[in-house]
Amino acid sequence: MKGYSTKQRKTLADYLTSHRDEELTATEIAGALKSEGISLSAVYRNLASLEEEGLVQRITRAGDRKIFFRFSGADECREHIHLRCRKCGKTFHMDMGTTDLLDETVSENCGFKMDRAETVINGVCGDCGKAEQESKK
Ligand SMILES: [Zn+2]
Ligand SMILES: [Zn+2]
Image (cartoon, rainbow, N blue to C red; front, side):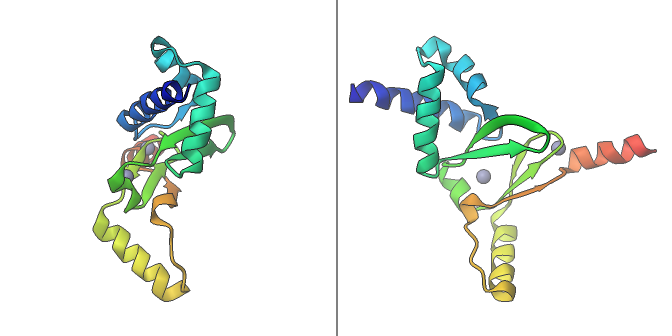
């Protein structure tokens, strides 16, 4: 049943691609793909294989036991670093200029070559930062 599982995998990858700025749990993904006839265990299985290939990242949040998945296999996303807001959970795509600058600086100063596609910087996004400021007023 190779063809069948390939189709499931493609459906899953397509779904994740169109939600690539979101972090989703396997349960959420399975819920959305239920109409496609993809079960939760199939979602887990396919996520695991996509993760092995470096196309999906597994994300854990502080104080949350759930495991979230994010698609990181889009071609352009292999070349830049991602920024992740710990408040709203959104992912931002660093522009190439900033990524290059950071990459060069780290390489020169630390003698360390980053894996761009796998690098995620955690912090607070502009909007959430502003909201935080507002709430302190
Ligand atoms: Zn990206
Ligand atoms: Zn945010």
